[in-house]
Image (tube, rainbow, N blue to C red; front, side):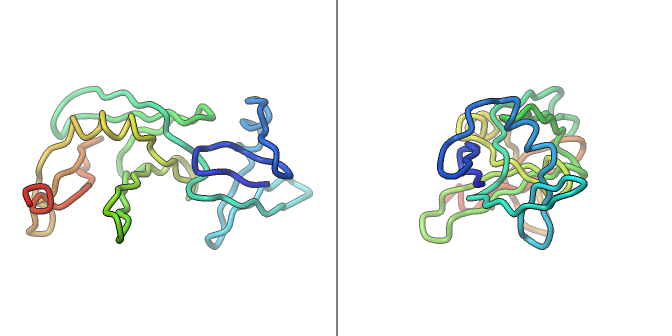
Length: 155
């Protein structure tokens, strides 16, 4: 089994098109030592994950400033409110600089934030000092999540 970067689940090279089945498999997905497994009481089967096992396909923002809350929904119906237990992080491709934003959904399992949601998040961004450096990032649940150094945006 494999999960593609876009969140499509595959079995023997064919996509699994039944949402209920994907939802069931996602509920028994675990990450251990950097590897992914489907774990039942009697079996533990390895699964390949191209990037992150989930995709955050939408979010809702409530409040503003450092009182803002960002609530994400994944393609399999999981909900996560960004904050200390569900941090947002952004990786940048060292060659192209393209960002890949993620939110922790549950137990070491992240969701790649889809492009349309990331563009909407950028509209909510703010500048804030972190460890003596100014960053552009996002507030949620009283925590600031750095996205990119402010100096890079100004260059």
